[in-house]
Amino acid sequence: MSHLNIEIKARSNSQSEIRAILDARNADFKGLDHQIDTYFNVPFGRLKLREGNIENHLIHYDREDKDGPKQSSVTLYKSNPRSSLKEILAKALGILVVVDKQREIYFIDNVKFHLDVVKDLGTFIEIEAIDREGDIGRERLLEQCTFYQGLFTISPADLISVSYSDLLLRRAE
Image (cartoon, rainbow, N blue to C red):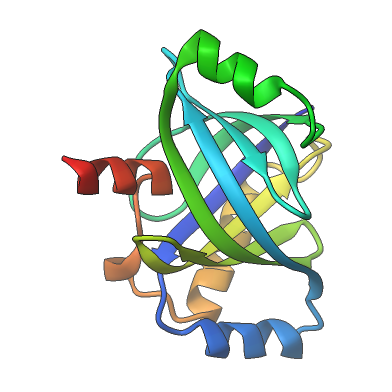
């Protein structure tokens, strides 16, 4: 299953304020997910296996590294957490890095919100405007991200241009 995302990732010390805004807007809280994202060595884009108590997917995505809203082309495969998929991928491709995070997951319509606490990195907010059926369009997704960035008063200085995996790899250098 492939779809289009426009997303924003930012450092956040305002988790409780953002949570209150989401609650006031009757966001659908899906729960707290302890996620282990294992990134594999690939020649194009990023490939990760997400293992959580809510979300379990093999995810390939290609996203530009820039501050502010960025477009991602995402392909998901729902995985079975008890399968040998991780072992196969690790043997075939090698593990690049592992991201360990606690993630609160919320939805308002087609927009997904993550309040993340990432081991060794800190606290973050992610906003993902998702077009699963191809009927919303890039411009509307961009408007949605920009609206919520303003609503949550996310400063341009707090925006992150890369993935958590990249931030962890930079720390290791």
